[in-house]
Image (cartoon, rainbow, N blue to C red; front, side, top):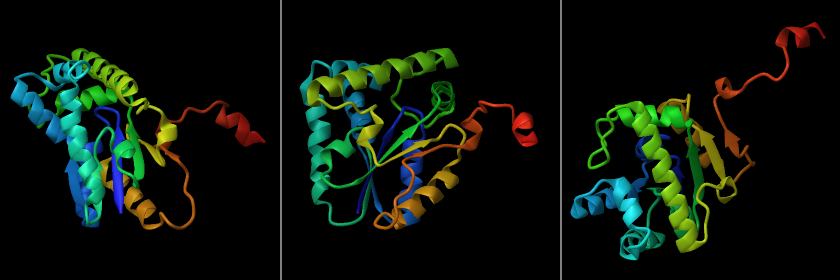
Length: 206
């Protein structure tokens, strides 16, 4: 079984993918690591490498070529990658989304992100994430004709804004175990993300 996980920057996809691989005993691969290594070779941050990749096709070719090789991976695998859902022939395709401000706060507070752009305040982090997402969407549309931001590409979409890693991993483990069984809802989010459209006191009187 192969599971491809992608999503918004700062949505926690890498953290969840690593933990889920441990919980399930699956192998783990991250193309983000490959991308950061290339950025280090060029002596630039990831945002600048993304913009450079708009004109330098060799960057994507290196990453995508390595990704395609995992179609032949002999054991269960979780792939943390922007385009694994597109390049891996058969996988459970999962997308993580997060409120942009929450995502920016996560990235701003994460000291483990090496060789990425440094932010002096949360507003700069927010803008940088939006710029990077826009750049990546543009690049993949032009190069592969796919919109990685469109939820129809995925089997499951999870909003991680208010959910912790153990909760998400537990949910995914149960869904993966029942993958060949009954269908589950495609979109999942914490109930606190919902806003009432009618006054609950008035509804209760009925």
